[in-house]
Length: 250
Ligand SMILES: [Zn+2]
Image 1 (cartoon, rainbow, N blue to C red):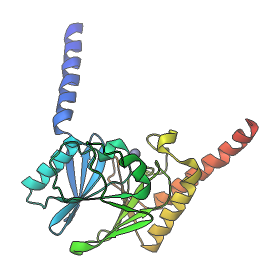
Image 2 (image 1 turned 45 degrees about the horizontal axis):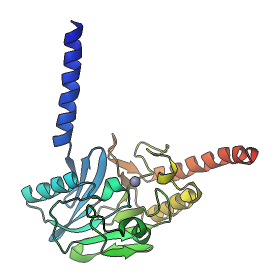
Image 3 (image 1 turned 90 degrees about the horizontal axis):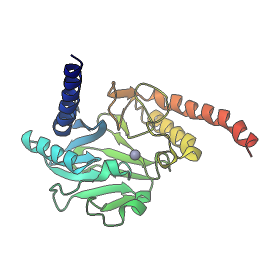
Image 4 (image 1 turned 135 degrees about the horizontal axis):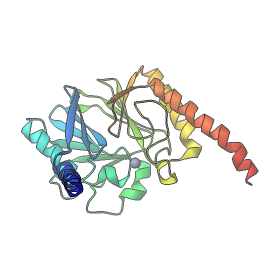
């Protein structure tokens, strides 16, 4: 009897991992021109822009191939632009996936120190920008903003103007304010976090943006931008609580 339970448990686990390796790529249409894709709990965007598609964070060779298959089988334009939301390895590795040679690859300037070593698994950026960058050809407007180090050195946020929606890859959860998935120092810049959220609040207010999508799979795909202020207050409380401890430990 015991043996049967273990056998069943083992075969269930084995089956789960195999099925995840081959079929955990999902897409969800937010609007006619905006598709969210998910693989291994990581989320990125496909933006249909006239005769080409823009991919935000191709993730990995497997994901890039899945995106290309999805576009080809659904009669959608192939990838013309890639935007790296930041330089972390789990967002940028297209490997040997077959991509159009004259693809434009866009990243923030500070990503350069991580992306300039000619790694064959990463398509090198063709465009670097400092503070803001606008894509407005083919009728669609997509605005990129950089507010200094936050999650790593070069994470940007993306305003999808047509949908009036923000893409904030890390540091925000659609369920509300909380610690990030990985709060360790390579993934967090505590000294500049408050500034990042303050600037993000200003952007949402100025452009009247009420919703955002994050870079990881969550129960709710879309969150309210009121969470930005909640998250700023969360970090302010952490800093206020931590300051006396830091002073006492000196
Ligand atoms: Zn990251």
